[in-house]
Image (cartoon, rainbow, N blue to C red; front, side, top):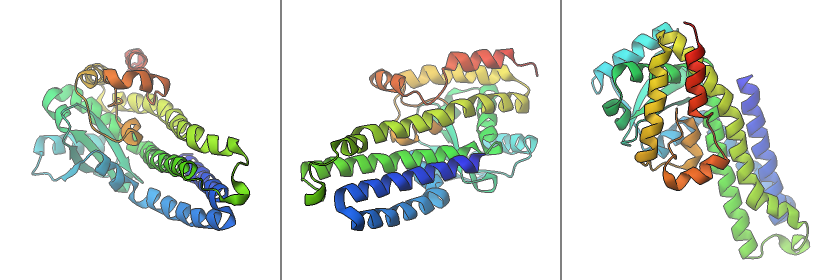
Length: 282
């Protein structure tokens, strides 16, 4: 099912890019953008995890860099019957974490410096289990591709805006079908965020439930979610919005972002996640 979603995202990106190329440069533009879409789809599958880590400015950790964290992840991944993921550390002081990678054999669990400092071991264990649950259910490929696709759609919207400013689109196309241009400039980026929202909401509930079973402590994860959301409102994180939906709690939750993220929420309300965890009987 996850691969069907990935194929759907890649197909949608291809159709959108070909449409943009056709609008601005006719058949030659369609062919050029089709080639670009093929390259981007290839990159999204094979290298999107590296792109996401770059968005978070994360670096890879070895066992000697964080032995306690490494042992925690190793123990939980054995409980989940998963290969050992690569560990990464993002320098942000905001507590947060995410998983990325194209499959369990090439998975990455990334934590921020803030989460290691501020969360007690019980809560950190719940967060790690949550990210391993994303890997187990193969959510991370869909989320990572969606994040990369959102960045690509934002790039297309930028191209469309500049094309409008400089009067591109060809003599045959100029002035025709303004609705297509409106969709490209305004609706397409919104559609990308809606795709992210639809993907991540149910995934978060499933990962929460699986994490609770792995740790046998739903209260630890519930407490972690509450604390992370509180910290996210106080400690800003500089990250590309396209990658925000991968984190366990949306990192763009500060006062300046709340009005925007409220419209396009990529995560279920934390209160609802905590309530569902409280209903679990482990």
